[in-house]
Length: 189
Image (tube, rainbow, N blue to C red; front, side, top):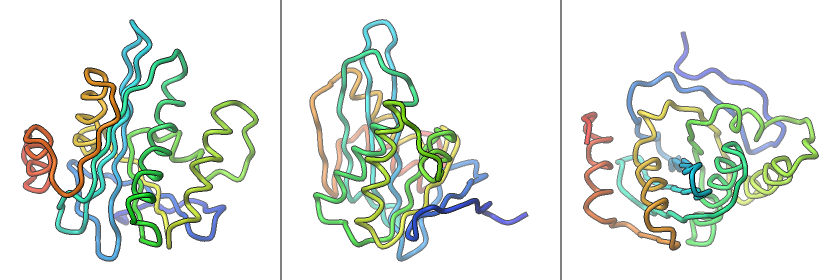
């Protein structure tokens, strides 16, 4: 069985893979890995968005989290966080790089590369994310289980508690550093 299962690619610089790993994996040079995740508090309508960009050594390049308020779908939350992550790394200067966009929302990964047009609100969000693909040399969209997406999940959960837009470049808070180190070492933080 190959490490990745390829599917279709409607954009010349984007592709999809499914990653059957048990823990977070380092990206292969020249790729940078952008992990994204959303968290939802259904009681008060709060959404947390978290994204983290790392290099082939697992070093933090950028982490961002943001809270949002509103009653929209979990799928829309995952699409919003993909847009937030790509937008953040683009504006910080990582455009023209090779990016692995990794998330634990398999339907969103599939929809991001679908050639079918979705006329829903979620479809408009998907088109926004697809627009960002064009600003990078290549984008590989990858599904990974939540246990392999812990840093982004921790950031999203943090955004539920502290909804202000937060950004860290190259060095994050200790609670995030502990998760990043555990990811690289293959242990549980």
